[in-house]
Image 1 (cartoon, rainbow, N blue to C red):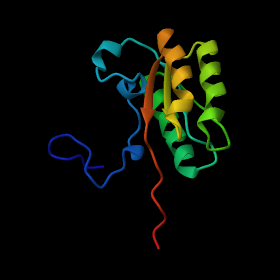
Image 2 (tube, helix red, strand yellow):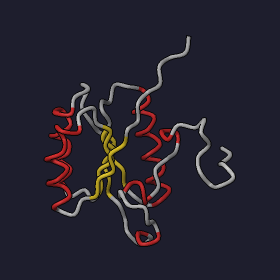
Image 3 (cartoon, rainbow, N blue to C red):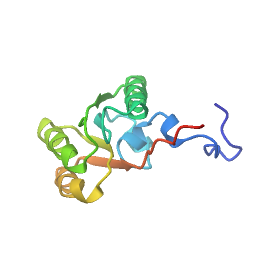
Image 4 (cartoon, helix red, strand yellow):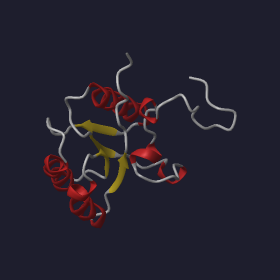
Length: 135
């Protein structure tokens, strides 16, 4: 993949195609501070039944392995913010230190993500939306 001259992602490349880095997994823009930090993250899609999210999960796990981090891909089988809440709560209880989430309903997950933040868990909401099929 060829990057733009200024180091940014070219406009024809979806952000979903870019594997997460330690900085994006931890919800911070400053990766050097995390160089000795091992991340245990959960990648939480809108649903596990949409192929683009499955591919994102595979990429997140590969990036985690490359970075020496552990990434779990898990989520509901229906597209619902409310259905994501138990996964967030479980991540809090299990001691994850990062949550990467794509949600259809930010209001439904906000209270759980606030509880996670209160426990020091970083979250990185994404807005990955599959493109419509071409005719």
